[in-house]
Image (tube, rainbow, N blue to C red; front, side, top):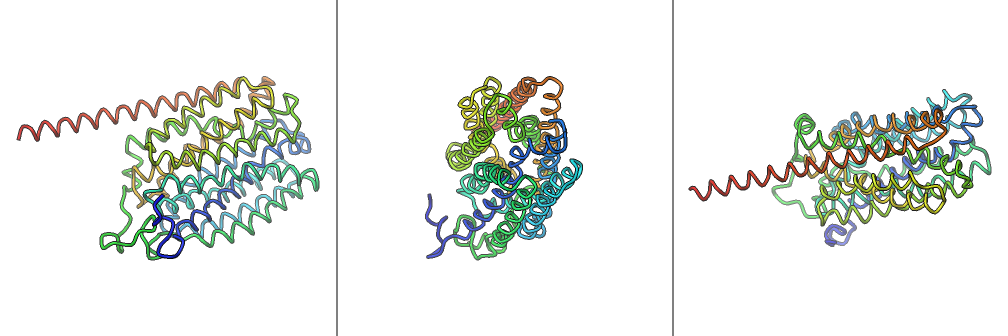
Length: 426
């Protein structure tokens, strides 16, 4: 690792403080959202609701926090990420607290679904986008650390929620988690600075050269980006795979309980996704910087398909734990690499806006996937159908990306060959 990227003179490069803030925001945001599986059974019991109806709470929140990126991303490019992250943490904490006071499942939809959805939606894409601007050589590694907060949050937040539910009940647990999220999230969001030039440095801690000084970020316009074949390919692949990506976060604990696994062990299995996810974000993000981020992203799609296949045949705790670790590894790498690949392809001028539009694909998949899995279970009393559908969706996503990358390589070689022929002819 280049020491200039860690230190600027005798000081720690400020980009790592921005990464720390993004790490904390993603930990609190998604860690809180992924406690939902721990609250699933109390909500279903107290409101006498079906699994499909309860799953819709998670799906609604997921749709909003990914779908809002189309608004929060471009807004962050204009007004900066810090303000949006602070507002997001306030809404997130408030939504959780109000969910604890809900008197009906409809009120849970409004409090959790809308509050958590808005909170994460206003903060997630802006903090990812700002990290991309602070790094160039280590972009995949820095992005991986930032989004590894999601994995760490998945490890620590559901067990904390389970313990609080056992001690004080699910309502007070939601209120306590909401207060904690707001206090820590707002404090860490204050560290965010939108551009390294505001701190007198270039990306990676390099000195600002004449060519960089006061220069506007380079890159494609949003219109150019979304019309490009590469963006369309990514959008289609992410849309399909997202029908299954977040099904484990809503249904893995109920699935484990159905197979006689105790609640405490089921929550730990869910936490294993966080362990694998953290490993994927840290190690696969850095590895992709050396092997190639686009090829590595293709491997993530294939890995998620493989992991879903493991889940479809798992009934024992150790089998589900294996699934959770493998799935978390590739899911974490997928989340870490998407923003970096967008930055590589389209530049930094509108990176947050482009990421936000790309994540609307994830929003639609998340809205449909977990709730559809719940309703399918209500109809069949089995998760077989939704799990098979998840595997198929990820396989098709892998094929779309593979064919697109191959076609792109062929076109590149063809253009290179034509250029060589022209030079020889001259």
